[in-house]
Image (cartoon, one colour):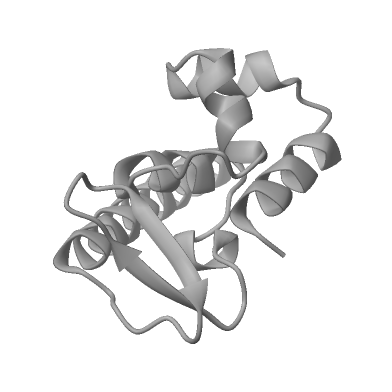
Amino acid sequence: MKIGNKIRSLRIERNLSPIQVADMLEISESTYRKYETDKSSPNLDMLNKIAKIYNKEIVDLLPENYVYQENKDNSVGINEGVINHLSDKIIELYETRITELKEQLQELKNENERLRK
């Protein structure tokens, strides 16, 4: 399944319209629709934002058994094969997400502690 099909399925599953998702991403609806129809590929930052909206990891949005390749313009190119390139940017995005999740976990622990008192 291509990226566009995956994000379209996730959007429909969550009962969101293309314009709602585009608004969350702060892009035009036409740009978002190009992603869903695979007429355009999101760059890494945008792919990360899309993944966050659907509570997924970037790799969950990539087609299975495909090569991930970041182009010079920071767009994502997908071809048959395996994911063979995890750039420093993806690692940085994962580290940021881990930090965010750790902070959320600590907030939940603190809230739980307050409720027990």
